[in-house]
Amino acid sequence: MLETNNEEVKKAYLVCPYDRNVNSEYQSTELRLLAESDFYEIVKINIFQPRELNARTYFGIGKAEEIKQEIKDLGVTTVILDAKVSGSQLRNLSEIFEAETIDRTMLILDIFAGRAKSKEGKLQVELAKLKYSLPRLSYLGLKQEKMQGKGAGESLRDLSKRKIQDDILKLEKEIKVIQKNRDVQRKQRSFYAKSVALVGYTNAGKSSLMNVLSKAGTYADDRLFATLDVLTKKIWDSGTEYVLTDTVGFVSNLPHELMYAFSATLDETLDSNVLLLVVDSSDEHKYEQIDVVLKEIRRLNITDDRIILVYNKIDKICQEDRDNLKEYPFTTCKISAKKQINLDLLKKEILNKLNS
Ligand code: GDP
Ligand code: MG
Image (cartoon, rainbow, N blue to C red; front, side, top):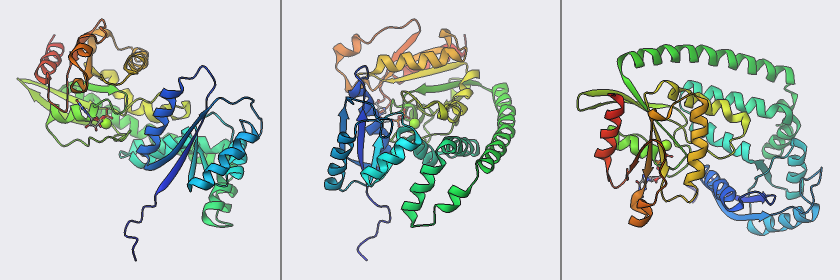
């Protein structure tokens, strides 16, 4: 046996049918990062503006046939489609492509499923999956059948909507119980200690920062969603004790079906005394990202005086760019978690806020 690695190479072809008001560079880069974090090897990113929208196949048949040919030539295993398509459009496209075809939401769900660690995280992902599958039963059944040989999809297709709806209710109940316990734990925590939460986009360096602040081995990794679940560390610094919480990263246009799974982790930030909004200073979309996170933070009624904007990865930009980083009406720190630059400054600001 030559094959020692039982993980197959998954080759993905990204189909990005964007209309003209979409920032195609940004969107497609994010999709690529997402796919890579789900262990796909990307063989092609096809960005185009559909000339016509087709009810059966979303974009034109001609385009679909063209893609099919490339898929064959490139040995693609999975087509990932960055568009809001219906279950039947997805099915029709996969029949044309003769390859597994998934959309962005299914990709994110797959990543969530692979990374969820806590009981609540897992249940939330399971719930999101069921809710997503409900209107897509026929397609998913078909897909399963194709993947596992004829007949294997039957069980999935035979699951009545009623059964899935029952499962959804059961899961929701179970999650409520867990959340209640979490609330109790949280109250106990906030009774003992002050709290600081890390928020921001995936890959900004939240886990790395948690690592250096707590000097404990939090998982830090270049893939997105390295932590779906809330991670918490207790920290003592110059006589002040606080709890530091890492949250799952933001993604642009998170499908609303996944919002609860995502918010489950973010709710924790509600009762944090201080929020560290971490940004990758070298990311060209950092200001858009700050805006999105701020919007979400304000939805949770968190006031500006509790925010510290952390411009991370300043080791990746030149001095002039460091000086020109946009100012906001709250405390700002320019640091590098990796190169340990200005960490003392940040620690001081955290203590200032906690003790004010
Ligand atoms: P998270 O998704 O926000 O938790 O981000 P991670 O902490 O997992 O970091 C994502 C990637 O950025 C990892 O490869 C880190 O090594 C890298 N990284 C984090 N902080 C810095 C930094 O200050 N400078 C540089 N150059 N890389 C960093
Ligand atoms: Mg992380």
